[in-house]
Every structure is written in structure tokens, then in C-alpha cells.
Length: 405
Image 1 (cartoon, rainbow, N blue to C red):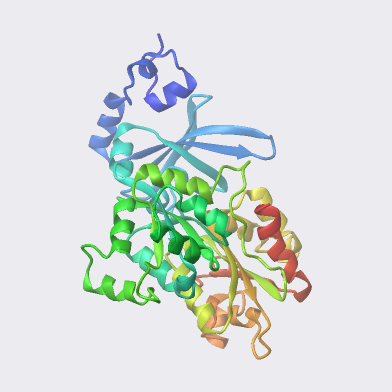
Image 2: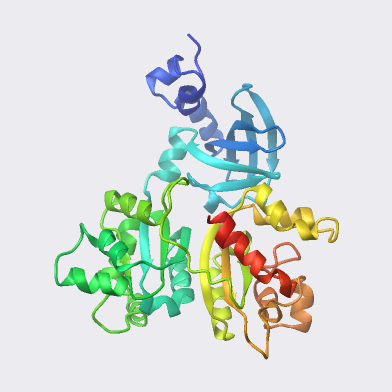
């Protein structure tokens, strides 16, 4: 009987092997490697659009020097020899995320060994956070606070609930009269639903909402979001089981439909907060800068772009700007956030607020623009905004009608 190196891989590729049936993660081989140098292992999938094939790889990440290597699971051979790769952030290494390694979008579907599962996944949880209508005005501050508490926003969507939908959501949680008040508030305007991930995420977010065992700074931060003094500014799942059910309500499987987005497609323009800015924790600062400049955010949603979608969205730049390939790579390198912005300001257009595409030029000429404040280079320049007036609604529709269709 064949003996394969890691149990997770063995169960997928050779279910009758000794390693798969014993349930071992291949401690002997990895323990020796770990003794020499720490290494994280993941099972990943990559869809090759050219060949229309799904490839399976083991991805190995070495935190000591930020290097990676890849092993082809089906061919049982090395695919990429160990190479230093600065564009992979260790914070992005969690199950369910997508990372870009040498222009390949790898979906992290499982841990590759017991060491990695215990080291990185032992306390990781996912929970639902809902920001209620009266606190939407503070959404930028909330994103900053979430980042400060080491929680990662993996999904987000601004949506509206009917009274019936709000009643269904709360049906198993509360009794009258609290139930009626909660249903009324949740259906009184737009809400932002988020999937939060982090160590003990359920407990962290729950304590934050319930004002339990918090610091003075957190008390002050919470106070500014509670408008009437009677309701918490948000909702949080009470347990992992509740979180799984509630996340399904707002973020169902691909073939199902959740509550609709809030896009209006009228007098608006598109803004995309790029993946590098999301990963660097700049989302809240960018949202605050937009609001402070007098622009209203009409719709908000996070997306993980496939390469084909990114190429299609940026098609107008192909053959026109030399940065086109890099623009595509950046947009599909991780989660991005699409915004619909009300753009009727006669004194300053939203494009003016974004500034020149090159952050260095922005810092010289327009130092208070988004790209000057938060951009790094011409590719990682914090945000994309619609260039041509006639394309404004088309770009909004691409995200909030086509991709969220």
C-alpha cells in the first residue's frame, strides 16, 4: 500500500493509502522539516482559464524569509522551487482566502499538515457583524476599529432588509417587545453586513457589542456609534453555530440569492478600493476621507475578482496603457471593495478627489487626494475610479449588477 506524505493530500488523491486511512498528517517528514525551519503548508486549487482545468497544489510558505514553493499534487512532483516572494502577506494565509503567487490565483482550501492547522487555524473563527442603519454614517471609523482589534473583514455588503426579512433574521433570537424594536430598526434603512475572521472572533465582537471587559478607549469608540442610547449600533452572532446560519442569510452559496445591494445606478460613479489597500488596513481611512470630502456612499460590497473578470473590467486600458497587465494582477490579487459614489458635486468631481494615477505625482500636485495619501506606486495606488463620464454607470453596473447578479 502506498504511503503519501500528508493526510489531507492523501485523502484527496489516494484514499486507500496508508496515510489517508491512518489519518496522520505525515508527522515524520514534516516534523523533521519543522525542526530545521518553520514552514506552513496549504492545499490550494488554481483554475487555468486557458486549458479550462483545475490544478491542485501544495503551497509551502517559509515565514523566516518569506519564500514559497509549490508541489503539483496530481503529478506528484515539484512545480515551483523555493523562491523568495515578497508579495505574499502572512496575514492572508487563511482557509477560504485567495492569494496570488506568480500570477496564479490560488484558493486556499485546506491546511496541508497538522502543524499548520494548529499554528494558524486553532483559534480562527468566523462571525457575522451587522452595522445598523443609524451607525452607517460611522462605517469608516468602524472599519478602522475592526482592523485595530486584529479582525479581518472577509466579506461585506451594504444592503436593505424588508420588515419580513428582518423578522426572519431575528425569529429565533428575541421575544417581544425587544423583537419588534429590533425588527423595526434593522429594516429602517441600509445596513452593512460583514463576515469577520480572527482569533476568537465570536467572543471578541460579542464583547465589543455588549460593552463587556473593554478598555476605556473602546468604550469611547462604542459610545459614538450608539445614537439613541437604547440599541447597540450593531449585531453579532452569539455562537459559531449561530454565525454559520446568519452568515448564510446574508452571504448564501453562489446559486442562492441574499438581500439585494443598495446600488442606484443614478448620478453615480464607481470606486474600487484595491486589494493592497484592503490588506494594509486602509479601508476605514479611505472611507472616512471620501465621506469627509462630502461624497455619499450609495453602495458597498467586497469582491474576489477572477482574472477573467479583472481583464474584462480593465479591457478599455488594454493596449493603451503599459500598466494593463499589472493592473489586472493587482485587482485579482485579493479582496477588493467596490463602491457606488453619488457624484453630483459641482465644485469637485470624485475623480478629482482620487488624484493622478501615479501617487508620486499626486503627492506633488494634489497632496490631499486618495492616491497621494494612500497609494504606493502606479499599480498599488489605493483606488480605481472611473475615468470617462460615459463609463461611470457602466462600471457601477459591472460590479453591482453583473458580478452580484
